[in-house]
Amino acid sequence: IRVWYPDSNKPILLGRHDASSKGGITDLAFSSDGKTIASASGDSTTKLWTVSDAKSEQAATARATLTGHTGTVTSLSFSPTSDLLVSGSQDKTIKLWNLQNNTAIATLTGHQDSVTSLAFDSSGKTLLSGSDRNGLIQWSLDLPTLMEQGCNLIYDETATNPPEIDNLCQR
Image (cartoon, rainbow, N blue to C red):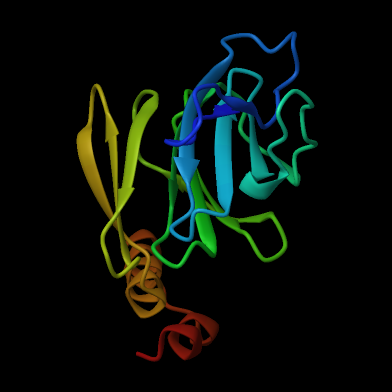
């Protein structure tokens, strides 16, 4: 990964994914504050880099390596506040990453093929994902809405409603 600055006539090396990585780097995303770059790769990982670590000819070490996908990571997007990163993959999933501790907090499923694009709305509460077969899927990342969708799914799938579910779902 090389960073090009407008006032420089040559790129500055930031870092590298594993040289044996199949498919190379497949996507890059800047955090909204411009301090972090996320890179997606054919090795099923996403790496986080601190932009200020870029040196002229010496590769920096990634700040974090996010693992969890089982296929090439194909798309990335930071939330508007840069505290959340989403990654899409050829494994047909989207992972939501908490960037405070670099852990996966959710996996979204619904695509029938590779997730090719991701974008947040300006509030960070809605995510759009794209794939060849499904076109676009709109995801609500608003916790009350997610709880309601989960409760509706439980009620739709169960013939009886145990009291624990009623208490959880406040029905």
